[in-house]
Length: 452
Image (tube, rainbow, N blue to C red; front, side, top):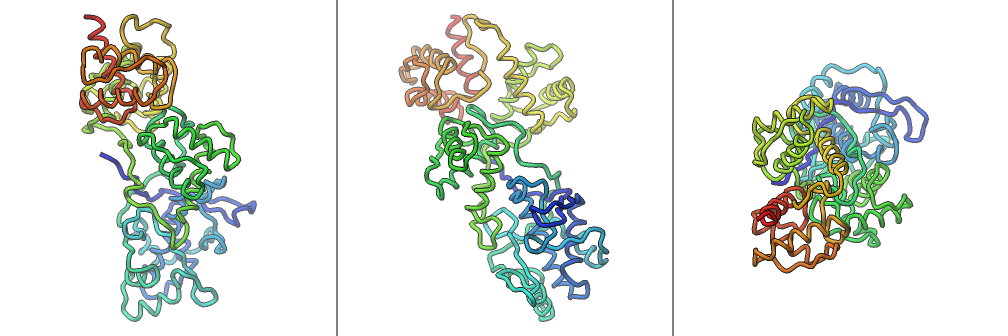
């Protein structure tokens, strides 16, 4: 089941006390305290409560839009928002906070405005409505609307349209950069790959030189590599075909731009666009292919490292898997939680890849080799593709449904069709991509036949 990457409320926000390019101090403070400061700087505490609430919703959503789109980090800055009204909203360091504003913010700081059918916080542009006017909310105009009896939501609808909604009680989390911390490259798989694929495909509508990606969702295949390389060429980056930090944020910057995410009338991100194919965090009680993948890695690592706990490939994250994860985390100096978060997953993958790379040539004997540590997909070539074809070719001799497959070392249409057929026969998702579960299943059947 796909997971939806909904926005969260950051615990803290970093404010730049000046224009973006100005050499000025950065102040980091709790998000709710920031909203209280801006509200106390932008509006008057004597206004009707419904006007105050409408304005505070707008202030919250505006700030969250900046955080969610990483508007400034994607341009190379080390802050989330500025305090200049030319670019953002007013913030005065160490200013007095009005009590009634503080109470309202405490109640609604994790609520924000969205367009119906979209997930990103709406870019709730506003102005004072007297010395300046804009397409968004008029701060002074909210006063008369509140005095006429309109609710906060009705006031917001008056300025932002009938098709808005309020997300209430959004979860709170640490505000960390979205870059995964390691470059994404050919053979990688995961939600971060899916995000890049989605964003590049949308950017290519405006920049048609960038080819469309038809690789399986979340799998970094040859098409994804070519799209990344072309993007890098178009925007004067080092054309490696890998997504390093500078490429990650340049893609995000142009995606924000073509989608208009920091505009009141922007295109927006739909729920389907925010869906990712893999579960973001694995913990006790979860099940499925991601859990089987985790168990495969842990079982291999435990075979070569007696300090780790072996685990069976059941596809269910039960007490045995919790114990194996805890042993792994303890051995590698990670927080011992029994939960596989991003840091634990990245460490497991690296440990597995290092283990496979350290094996001597011919280690497997007549058995199938261990999964090489990266996805095999259409367009790739090399020894691991040749091994895959060898295994499938032998299996095809006794499984009539498998098409005949020449061993060429190139992953073309015939190999993809053979993989899809095998996956369908053995109850796996017929993606045509060979990840750890498909490889392990093929290897198991090959070993059985080869040792008869």
